[in-house]
Image (cartoon, rainbow, N blue to C red):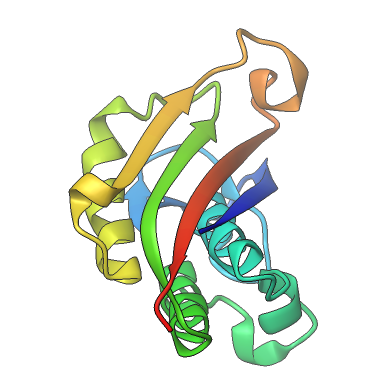
Length: 158
């Protein structure tokens, strides 16, 4: 068994869509980034890659590469999972959390969960999405950005 941890954060800015776990959320601001800036998908991808000691999404999908400009993060996650499977691992489960003061995530969590499960080849009962605020503290609490964390357990298949 191997465990990986992922973390990502992006600034909230006007004129960008807000996409989390592949869900387009109506909001006055969105996340700034080279790709679609889906911090939840990025944290999950980092957890998966980290558990296999295969670096992080910046190594595989650098923000200096124009090929990833505006890229759908769920597709990047699918590719990360494929790399890990080719290395002889299967994902046992993933647990994740979104840290955002606004908007409220509860209405979107189940769709995020389904999207992430599909992108990773897991069943929804192998993948969890939680959300929390920071009670007005820090950059997420001040609505300046959104962060996400994820943990992944890999099993060796070979």
